[in-house]
Length: 350
Image (tube, rainbow, N blue to C red; front, side, top):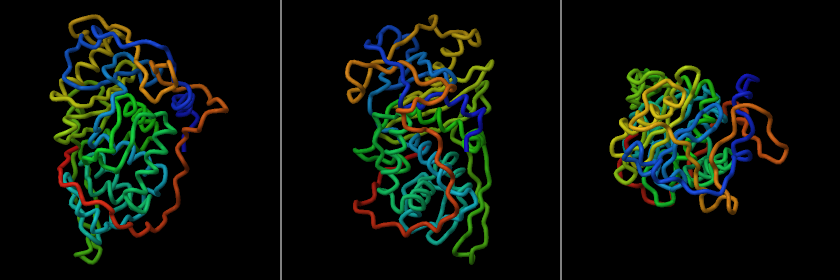
């Protein structure tokens, strides 16, 4: 449940108060940083102002950055102490994996650490089956929640981001989803964690707990001043992906990067570029240039999104609520439905 202080940061619902302006993205502005990413966005997390963008509404495979939305839905719907069963299907998910086995059980809270730190595809499917009854069922919940948050150009087909032609998102949408997720204190705690020991109840040990160590893939934690956490992603098709937040001098910035071949260099350049606007970093190569963002094809006609709602003010009556749903009481997960399609063989590393 959001506190009043958190509500002041939320502002108007992200899905209804985006600022619009008919314009095109200035090519010279996006070239200033010389980043390798196919798409990227930098925004002020508190005001929603877009500080930099490159192809922000271009649909691309998001790889394991998908798990931000998976985790958000889990935090909204699961009791953190609920014990989630591991199905054979979830245990067989392609890498990366926490190492769950059929018949094991793991708490919802530990599953989230496995999801966001280790980027476990097995934990992603455990969460999906426990909430949606099946991977397709959970994907429907993901798409509905994404639309509520204002992520209008995304379509999710699974909870982990493994390759699927129907699974795509944009830099803008990922930034919007991550911005909202960071309002949840438990999500923020998890993504700020570098190492965690999980307790997995092993079926092979008559339910006795076995410790499993997981570590974050986020190289900015502990190495970049003010890094607040984030989520990485990688598949061959998606290349390197990242969405994360950094705070410095009472300013919080969010970066989303898709299709990068130099992920951490790109991410640092973007954060440095943003903090330079506030006199907190040396601008790379050139002074920051205000950027306006071209609207996606499915947006309102003749309109563009150049900012997201400030994290303050109340919601207009016509807008859908973006408050997290109340956490449900512990409910025994439904038996996963049969998977209609063959399992994707491609590996995905978070």
